[in-house]
Image 1 (cartoon, rainbow, N blue to C red):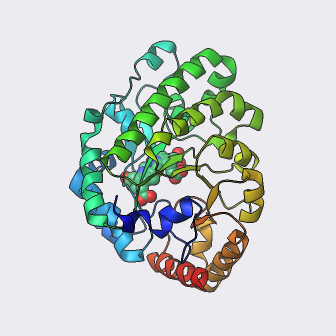
Image 2 (image 1 turned 60 degrees about the horizontal axis):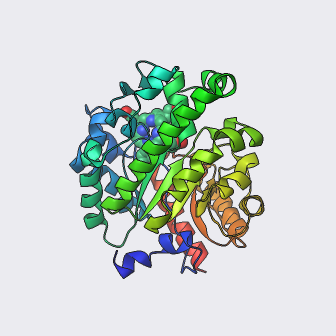
Length: 345
Ligand code: 1CP
């Protein structure tokens, strides 16, 4: 890693070091809100796009060029490592990941084998290409966390209440733990491949874990997320941990071992800092829907977030969840500039 990259505002903020201005990136910054993305994706299925390194490099670079964000995130999806080890699944436009044969018994769990670098050589190639192109801008690698992956595998697709997932967790705890154990190895392996190929940081997306209580998180999820963060400790790259609706879980998310805790829009950042506890940077947390309002509203709300973040140990500005498809890219460009300028004053 060059010293310029190591000194980037994003990596410094993740490490709770002083910064000249607050770094910004946006979850789902590449994607449907960008016309140049829609043009490139025309007629190319999502999983084909994820396995085509030149396309991944170009799509990942688009928001960096357009917005001047302080970090890139690899264009991929949380189900890519599952597909790579042979799970029969697809990403259906307008729906999301769909699994042909949902995983609901021990035999199905046993088919989930650990991931090898050769299974995802296209990811290695894309990450290597990107680190060259990005220079001093960090690349964030990512993976889905075991709970969120388990939900797609058990439900067979997107789900509102995660009924089958919870039915297994409560009703067949041994099977649940066996599944989480396998998913932990896959997730850890996939994150290590991305870091070994040149990614500067990783984010673990436990998007749907806000569906469980604190006690259940402690028993059924925490041992696995902890193992993942511990399994990355030797690589010395910032680890970010994010979920939606996790207000009640923020303390446990902090305990799991990440360097940065992502916060959705429901908990103000100063309050989140006291829930997470000392020794962590925070990432967030503008409600993505605010970007659909006039610029004056966005500016005021973003200013409030910077004020709330003033007392935290480190802050990476982001949305509280992914960019909504109907977002005007000009709003994101203005927001990036605003955060840079307002935080530098
Ligand atoms: O630029 C970027 O931010 C990287 C792109 C990225 C990321 C980080 C994509 C591309 N997917 C993801 C992660 C991801 N995938 C998550 C975690 C982040 C989050 O909470 O938003 C989740 C839950 C998924 C699963 C998924 N894949 C969904 C959600 C379905 C549901 O349950 O509601 C969807 C719609 C997809 C498909 C997908 N992934 C990415 C894109 C651009 C798309 C749309 C594909 C298409 O239009 O064909």
